[in-house]
Length: 283
Image (tube, rainbow, N blue to C red; front, side, top):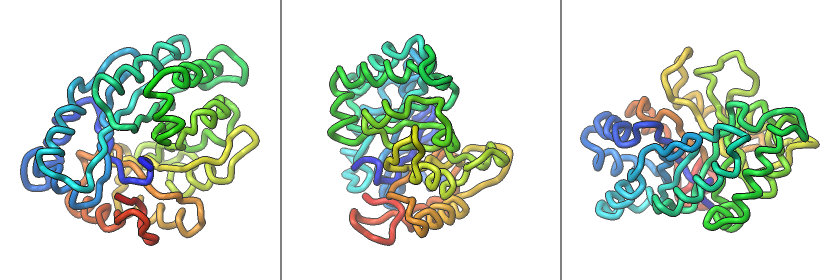
């Protein structure tokens, strides 16, 4: 399952960010990919879409070619993520995501970030129905339909406290077998509710009348922000979630070009071969 792996999300300048990661790890982009592979990172997820705008064109093809040439064994998946921007373009956003999956030759891994009130509103309202239309269209077209229903490769990215509310069409997320991807950014929003992985996953795992329980996959924020939060704190929080029985397996790193070598080592120590019981992610 794609979301049981450790993912590295890449932002608006994916190759530059990979270059920074490589430099931090003692070399260039190829060295960075080798070092991520050695630490059990299983997937790269570059940003490919911002509303109807395309980002990082050609990056997936280039990175996949490098991975093949380097013969990497753990870092095998390259998908993509989208910043969905508007309920009025919900159908067009679905078609754009589907087209990018095909044209960029992505593996069966895609995440839709909807944390900016894109589809969030009172139930039944026009904006709220945008998510309904987005999922409706995705389930009509390939390969998005198969990514969602057969591969279990679609993540729905949201603010961590959102499952407690009724302002998304959570039933449509369930229809598409969406994996819950809460944005765990206590570095950016230290006073906001449920920012740590253990709190966000507990909220998702308990479920609510409008939020069906689903596979949880926290997205931890390593980007520069208001509070210094590092890998050790996120890992401790994920262990806490695991001990509480609300951690399924797998997590993502946002802003990975800010991660230090000791932090990469810490993440690598909790990634292990598929089926390993005492692991936070598998490869």
